[in-house]
Length: 410
Image 1: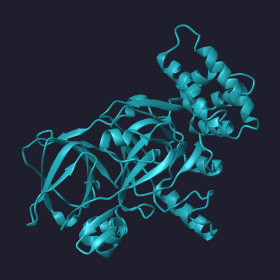
Image 2: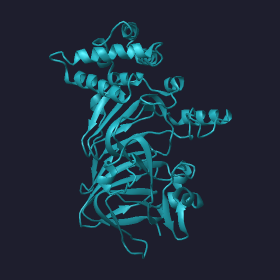
Image 3: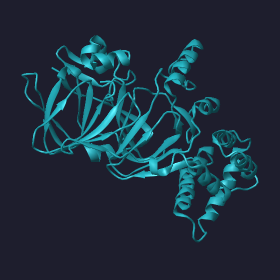
Image 4: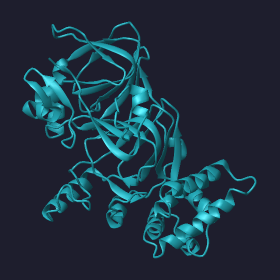
């Protein structure tokens, strides 16, 4: 047996939506808790369960028992016998924290450093929960709002120029003297470490409200100021609300996707989508949260480069008869695609372990090398495909999200 239905854990966080996953995928929520994330994968914090020939077992334990067979030889060797990606359904009713993730070297160094300091894994002030980086891809199911990467420098200066008062003006003047990544770093750090944050935030809030009354305000500027005011409704007087003026504000229509590389500050604001990432839970926060914020570590690991707005969204590559839409990213840990199926059979080659999630419709899947019957999965269900599968056939009027290892290392 090489295809297994997944029994996944739903994480309840205050920012999650009580209804979205139920309405979209039929997940039960009798206690009306905020369902923030559904984890599909083998992260030890909340590994999916499968029914194997030996009974119910955690997916990470199943992989550990025979990693080269389950993951494929090259994948097992490259990723230390671990499934290299984590797949999620994420549903935000209110904004998440401003956050960034370390690159691989930073994660390994941080993991070793905090282990040497004997900081417990569950300690509130611990930054590194594992030794892995965390590039991410988000695919929108509903309209999805987010902050992603630094705006272009001239846009940042324009937005702040219009709201600068006694507190902000000296900081902005220093940035204008050095409109380079190092200058942006100093500006961002000076905002997060300002001696009287309440006064600075109050100044910017008042100026943003005044800006909304100006005729002829650029649409981009209007949305930035409106967003800042909205963030303040959720996190009153939090210095993180100023990130609305310094980070790109992107709205994904259903079916659109974007990529978030290591060292990129971002925040998910609202909406439900699929999130595929390297198998990590490392988060460095920069505001909009009561949780631990380590500003020196955030500054050390952040890449202070602008991301042009037109480069935020991914354009899929269509393969074969246009049934598979592949969203190519620089990440080797994962590859994300959407399969658009009909009643005709489609053959899929398997070179490493995969996870399939049914976004719409009903999926029928049959392993060519096995005598077992075809299996059926409905909307909201997911399955793990072992590398032992080699080939499978899918059909059904369905839209399927497929997560696998990047083809570069298969």
